[in-house]
Length: 266
Image 1: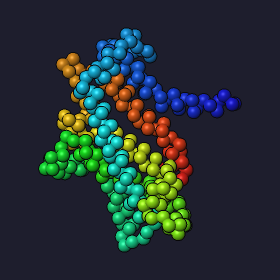
Image 2 (image 1 turned 45 degrees about the vertical axis):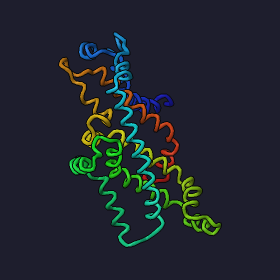
Image 3 (image 1 turned 60 degrees about the horizontal axis):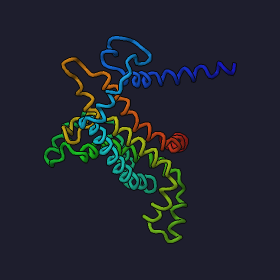
Image 4 (image 1 turned 45 degrees about the horizontal axis):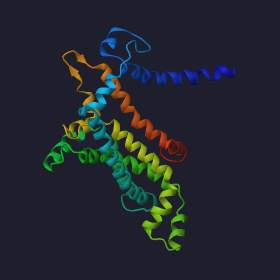
């Protein structure tokens, strides 16, 4: 019986990991082998796909561009969401609930709705094909999400903490940075994680607002067609490398995410 109770979780984990293994398996194959044979391991093991990504500026610049605007967006989103979430959690003002709901409606809208307005605005202000253009566009979705997550964490902190700090002579920003932010560190980690992941996987706005200088890796991956067809091995290698930043972020914030599921709005 003890061995049987592990059967379902083991099968589920294998089922989840199978696509990742198959992507990794394909990344070490040539396109001809992928199309011609079905094998659990590469019959003609090759590193050419990874070699091309790390030596071709078109490919490795795609990763650098993606990481650049994702980090910028995460920093901006969390920095703006922190004071906004504090205001929603500590104060009551006219229209606060309506404003909070309006923020969430921006997160509910599909990116395609905003693609054309962003394109025209950034072209007019000469921000098209820049990292900051994509970072600011993603703020429209990530700031409401971060505010919603952080407000849940902040509401769980007793207001007496604020009052005690003020009685001890702390200014607002000194209290906020030195006492309040460490108290909700788990919420900040969770909010940063979700902002990072959304910005990393979003394709439509990133592709629409860039062309060459700031083109993300996802856009590069959609342009691998040649006269012989798609370079499937190269696509698989690029996809494998695309998973790594998300895996690294998950590793560093895994404890915060666990606390988020237990305490916050996750």
